[in-house]
Amino acid sequence: MTGVRSPQRSGDSSGESRKERIDRELMELLNELRVALPGVQFLFAFLLVVPFQQRGADLTDFQRDVYFVTLLAAAVATGLLIAPAAQHRVLFRQHDKEALLRRSNRSAFLGLAVLALAIVSAVLLVTDVLFDLTLAWITAVVIGAFLIWWWIAVPYWKRAHNAQDDPDD
Picture 1 (cartoon, rainbow, N blue to C red):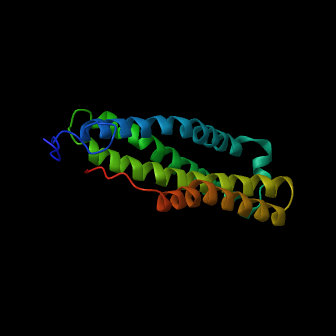
Picture 2: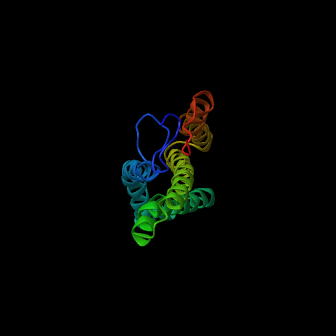
């Protein structure tokens, strides 16, 4: 029969069912997070030992505030980037992978955004401690602009100019 689709099959050329597509997309997301997690965990671990270094007491109020923002951002980014795997484990066999995929995608995006804040804050702090505040702000703004450009602007521009897959076809 021409033009009649099986309810189990999507309309894309790969011939995968909706369930197969959701399973694949969830596994792709979890695999992508495996790349981001070691970096954010390393940053968080580093931040946890900073106060116990001898020089930690020599920080200015501004540097302590930036440190606190960086520490919180790294902690929140870690939580957001680990959330998809944790939810996947807790919700195992609950037959709602599509909702899990949507939540996990939002969590991963927010986690990367907060990770960018942690990176920029860490650069601001370290550059201020080693050099001066003016260079620290310039460096932090450049790094922030780079991350926004490469992590957000370019992908959204590509998304806006490419044909979208319709998951319901």
